Image 1 (cartoon, one colour):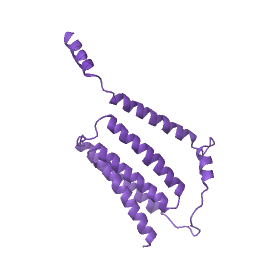
Image 2: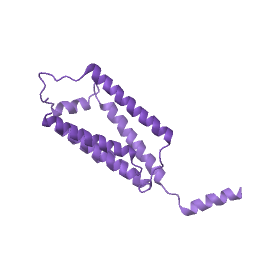
Image 3: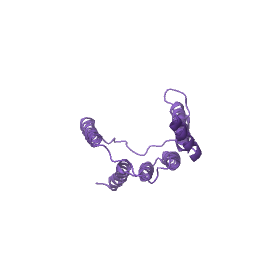
Image 4: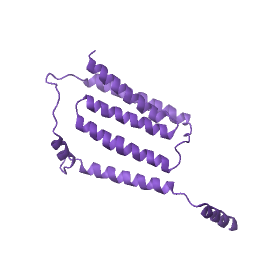
Length: 183
């Protein structure tokens, strides 16, 4: 096994380990931190593949933007220190079954189609200007619409988080309970 393959497997194990910890931990803040490590691992994989621009975008957008937004959302809802409830056994069994089916499906795809090295495989050169042009393109293979959809989704999530986080004043709570008792 070559050193390149060993590095790939180490980075992949780090990404998968952090991802598994992200979805299995019962503390929501720790889950966000494990997600942060998983996304940093993906950026490391991009750096290893020598796609530095995409790695930098991964760090800036996902690590610097999305995870920070998630962490702020957690702090705004004041649930950072609380433990999430234990998963229902039925859901846990279906989750394990779904993961196993995913592994079987992936194995069958690899077995059927395989991954063969190309004889002319080398590093590919992608111009940053070409990446930017395609991301901002409105043609068939452009990515303007997905970027706009994601930005609207993030805005809606942040507004929803703020609405949930707004505390009603104690007097308002007492007034509401008094009105209910008077009815």
